[in-house]
Image (cartoon, rainbow, N blue to C red; front, side, top):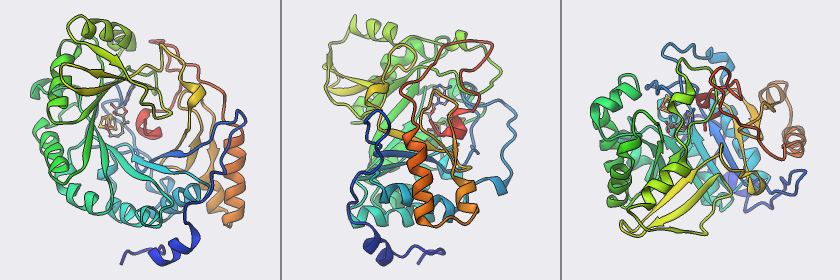
Length: 348
Ligand code: SAM
Ligand code: SF4
């Protein structure tokens, strides 16, 4: 049994497929919560973090019990999909305990999906347990298959660990999606090979444009690569068929007929994807962001640490969702990020 108060029996009585009660001011149902479980990471990807990051003091970060309570409150209110992210979720101490406890919502039928976004470095150790606990799909971030470039982009990472993690996940029966950030000067020429490799594994692939989040040392306009350009380039030698497959998120999907695989193109800077947005994000400090591209925030940690009961917590969540902005406001500006927080705090 796990060390904190969340027995499966209790959970089943509290939640069996709760109705969706989180509807924002624009009529969008919020059914997807991303939870950042830590701001820490064992890598330092150049577009994500500064080389020398100051991480949060432990007291500011939600405990495993607090993470469980907040995530479970959203599930009670109709969230059907939970994604754990970070920082690197698999470096959080006790992460598998949290996954094990949250998996009760899968067993009760309250949750359709429990998943993770990971850099994959620790995945080999955890893939079997994740599969056992009901994790069926996982996103692994990987921008290159070249060991030296990987080391440079992540400031010291070991590509072989990530590849071993991906193998372990596939062997455990977990569906893998590879996420790569498109970087003009680093991996642009390699993208077709990366897509081909991912599709060869039976994995979906998603390309992401760099987003102006958080202060980093580099000039973002140097890294920015328009996915409209990438798509045009790919379409010069591959047949790309638009798919209707949608997740309520910013990705647009195509099938690459030559590889038979699915390719997502996340273009938050070039397109407006807000009208179908069904997601909100909880940081590891308990701040709820209802829009990735805005500085809106509700402090749910303050609510629970002040001793709020479940009803008061629900009210705080309703108030935050009711204020979800209609859309975002990104613009590439080398001098100033559109949003001051790092992706590693919000969880991407
Ligand atoms: N550490 C895990 C990982 O790398 O998958 C989870 C957290 S990471 C912040 C989530 C995703 O955000 C990764 O796919 C990463 O590539 C992406 N990301 C980080 N900074 C970004 C930026 N400035 N623009 C676009 N994507 C970014
Ligand atoms: Fe760590 Fe993920 Fe950010 Fe890379 S993208 S530094 S792996 S949190």
